[in-house]
Figure 1 (cartoon, rainbow, N blue to C red):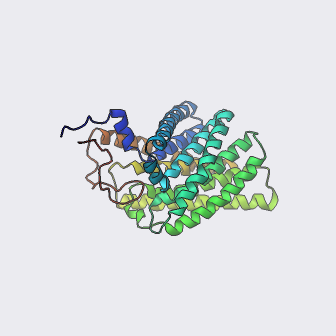
Figure 2 (cartoon, one colour):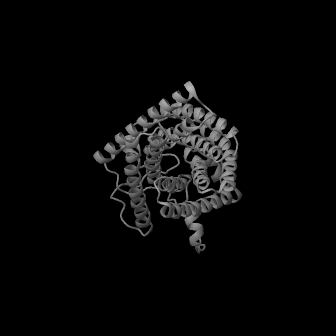
Figure 3 (spheres, rainbow, N blue to C red):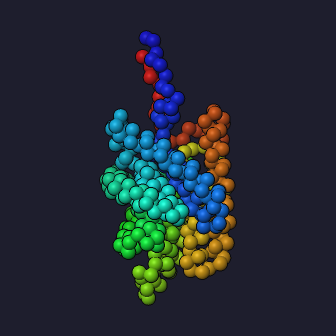
Length: 342
């Protein structure tokens, strides 16, 4: 039989997109936030433009997939990486709020708040034991909403947003504890990149806590509790950072994998959380550490982009075997890019 025409190049690319690709937006967006906090406005806005473009492309793919392949969308929506859609939206929204575009930040908060419970419930209903690092995205997405709500509160968009941020922060911590019980700790040594979300989830929790600490809504004992909790969460995030970095050094995984964007995001988030905590609590050495960690994250971001481009042109991937699919952690049975044949 005569083979049917191959898929158009743009459609072929979209067939390769997985929910884990949202981590690229998260990584780029949080670096934009960090560069803004350290005074590198031009570079920050360039990364914001890149993150925004990627967000639009992935949002278009998300919408198109619902329309043309509901079964595939449903299959993807029950996996933790689907929550990158929520987390990416909140990160980009936070940066737009810091830029002063509050109307756009509010619109992104509404989008994230509508999508979040749908995806969260779908993911939690299909949880199991021995999951990869993506399981912590339930915490990341929830704390992302908390951070964006708190940022809009400081922008003067409503005192209720501060209360909502506190409620989401508490829920995020509960979800982290539950995810930790389901995490396969062997991923620290074997993971292809998303194991870093175990620390990134604590880092975004520390960022949310630092913003709540700075809020005048809570004083006295409440303020002191939030301040101490910020220190604890940041210390735990830094401990994860050191542990995962040591594991990477002992057992390098040099091939490109889409889950490497889930490495860059925690690196950038830890830097931003450290910077924010240093400012809120007036600890100079934390601000210095945050700047150092930020440039480490920027460097890794660049390396991962090189790996992505190299993989696209068919370059070697470090001699590693084909990695498992991002959504499930199970060995792939068929190529991600499929062609129509008679």
